Image 1 (cartoon, one colour):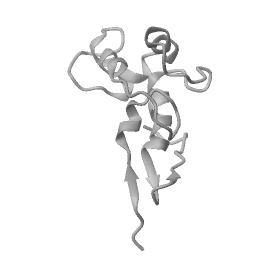
Image 2: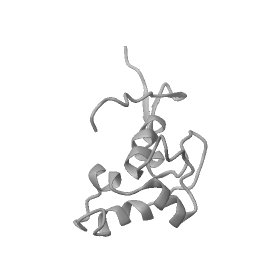
Image 3: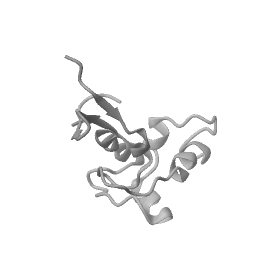
Length: 103
């Protein structure tokens, strides 16, 4: 059986965890790589760099990324959770990621 799967990769850059439209932002991703506290400025953003950046700090700086910091403490955690909304099943379903799986 062929099953249609939608890749909505723009959701990775959305500042809200949902399938509804929200603002797309890249500033925090760039900062995760460029800021020496988090990254190495090599032009490649990694989960290691995103995990080094506190979601509370990102939210304070941008005024966005509304998520519970106790369940999603880093930008990396937020992006991993966002993947559930980036992959769709049969045009309407949302995938449920395995939170225990390594990134």
